[in-house]
Structure formats: structure tokens, C-alpha cells
Image 1: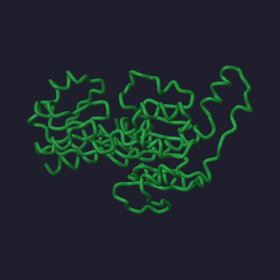
Image 2: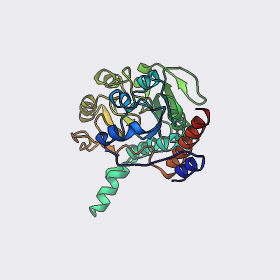
Image 3: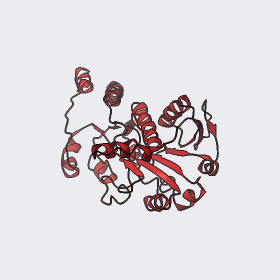
Image 4: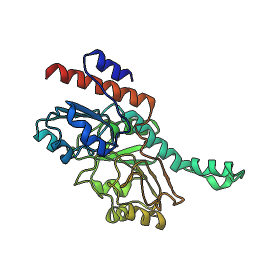
Length: 290
């Protein structure tokens, strides 16, 4: 709310509706010069065509996959996001998932809640000394790398730009798949990255690898992941994102070697505060110049 008040103090008229439906949006949005959305709200071409007065769209968060950004820009609409605001929060969730996969924290807790003392069942692994492969090395990937280095992990990465980052060795995708003990995804979903981790990629991975996806659903072929988890090729997976959200098929999540969460990577008080502040800053600046 602080960010909203800041925008109002700067002279912007700001209305909020956190539960608006797609149907309601088609009748409401045409009256506005700009809109701010999170991941739930989709701004697609048909909606953009209904809003000839729309001047700016801001996505509060990382990625623009819920907005037809190129089409909006072709209509003269400015499209922005807040790529750095939630990076630390998503990175911490990815590292937290790795700790759980290494030490079976969730499963051990479940047995304790069931009043069982199964100490011998939970021999785990240390993260230190293991190789972490990062697919994608943008703002979030870099934050994960910093934390992994501090834990004593060897960090390798594959990134489209190939730009070097301190403490990270850049490798080909095939080398990353073959050498990583943990693989963590940190790239946007595009036509090129859709289902880029499928059956062929799982076959190239080290036996017993653990996979973390806090990026976007649909980058991993979930049917191929299911097979790899059942066969034991993948020892465990931690998923914050899914091809369909919420999932209609929970078969993958019901596997004993899978943990998951409902797309909460950016859901921390700190990240939300930074997102709001950055949205306010961008909109105030936009209003000054238009």
C-alpha cells in the first residue's frame, strides 16, 4: 500500500482490484491509461485491442510471459517489468529446495508428525563439494550462484549470452547435464525454451541428479520428468512452477521424491516491498515524461 500512496502523492490516480476476473478486465481496462499486473492477470492481444488509450503496462515481477509484450509495443504501448526486485527471494527458495532434497527435511518432518522416530531412514548428503548446474544466469541465477559458492558448491552454468560471472564456469548444455549433481533452472519461458528439458536431456544427466525449477512451468517436459523420477535417473525434484497452474493433474507431485510449492518464489515481504517500490518509481517517471 505504501507504493500506491506514493503514486497518489505524485499525482497519479490509482485504483486497485486484486480479484478482477478476465471478463471484468475487458470492460474495466479500456478506461485506463496504464495498468499494473502480476503473474495471474493475462494481457493478450484481444484485450490490448479493446484499449486504444492504454499507454503503459507494468508487470510487477520477473518475466513478461503473461503479456503479449511485442504486440503491445507495436501499438505504441510501453511495457516494463521489475526484473531485480524478487531475485534474492527466488534464489533463496531454490537454495532451500536444494537443502530439502539433500536432507529430506519435508519427509523427516512428516514422520515426526506421525509420531515416528526413523532416524536411520534419513541419511542425507552435504551440498558442499557438489556441482550445481545453472541453466540461465540472469539476475536470479547470479544470486543462486553467490549463495551456492558460499556453501562450497562448484557452480557451472549455461546461458545464451555466455557472459562470464565470477565464481561460475560457463559450459555447454550437454556438459552441464553430464556433470551436475543439482540442476537449477533460471530462464524465461520462450518458444525456444519450452520443453527444453525433456527425455533426451534426462538421458544425458548424471544418475541420481536432483532438479530444481523456480523459473517457469513448461520449460521441463513434465511427462519426461515423471519417467525419470520413477526410474531413479533423477533422484529428486523440487518444483515451484508448473506447466498448468494450478495443476489439474497432481500425479507428478504425489511421487515420494518430489517436493513442491504453489509458485511462491517471489512471495516474501521483502520482495513484495521492492516490487511495489520499483513499480511506483517506473510509473511516476513514465508519467513525468508523457
